[in-house]
Length: 242
Ligand SMILES: [Fe+2]
Ligand SMILES: [Fe+2]
Image 1 (cartoon, protein in one colour):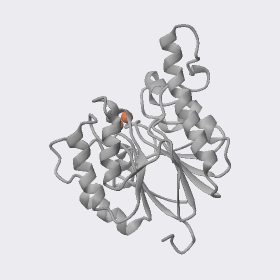
Image 2: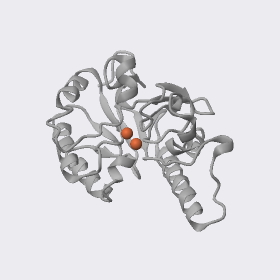
Image 3: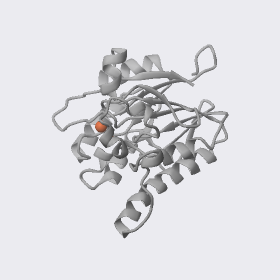
Image 4: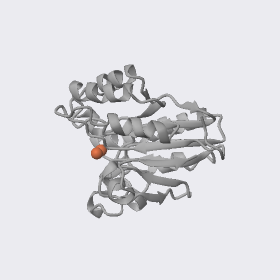
């Protein structure tokens, strides 16, 4: 499946935000991607509100995709309080939801989690004081731990980390600085930077952010929110060679 230079062509898109009124919103694009890439990665906010009909509409489009589809949920997929149901519907359509489980495709590993907020560097919220503040930070630490476990389970020389929230401020440039702390967590980058095999990180969530950046450890990060890609690449998805 991999192309002439032995690289895997990874198509990535985040923030699909499928709505109940949509009719086969991604069918044509998934068919196009099937002819250009070896695997399709979806970086969360797959549905607009996490409603069952929204997931079913996307599931129908996923069924028509000719290459493996994998990815993570986003915060929008949690809005109706039934992320397990959204995940189940997409899984039954053939999508691999990464979360606890990492996968290997053609020698390239994929590990991913939704991630969470909490900020970066000096602005990182610490688990201190009120129980609710600790619970909030716990969520971010948990997501980072799951990502680290997934990455550690891979035995590949090359891997891709798949997220919804951003591991770095670099791909947030363009968003108001006041909300950076709600767009991701440096704890995700800390997990990624423990491994040499991570060749690329893809995330969404920051609709007004920047396409390319790096983790503090130097791992390339790509914000593939479709609203970032469309004006930049003329299409709502990116293709990375890994
Ligand atoms: Fe989004
Ligand atoms: Fe989001």
